[in-house]
Image (cartoon, rainbow, N blue to C red; front, top):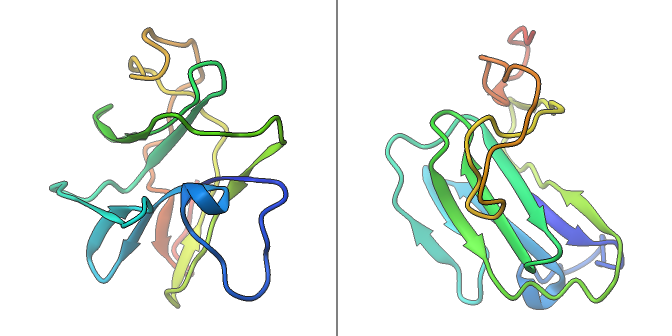
Length: 136
């Protein structure tokens, strides 16, 4: 999950890296990594159940924050958006997983922002849950 330039190819082989216009983290086979070139393994325990993606076009940064505790997961710096529209980017491979999106801004200071943003209460339920499990 992350963000991508609007011009990113959506069919065929996708270059899942900043060079390909995608700034994202991936959770696969029980491991979390940033999709840098080459990918960077991220050691987090426990693995977050909710992640905020913070885009700062002025500072050219894309930050990923653990929404469970406000801890920074990873920040891409010198992100070149090339004056393009930036869109949310998701890719789900695992069967039986459901992605739920919430409109929420971090309650805790974001490394990319430097201070807190007012926002509604953060939902207590995880964004990723087994398919069929009730979400609020």
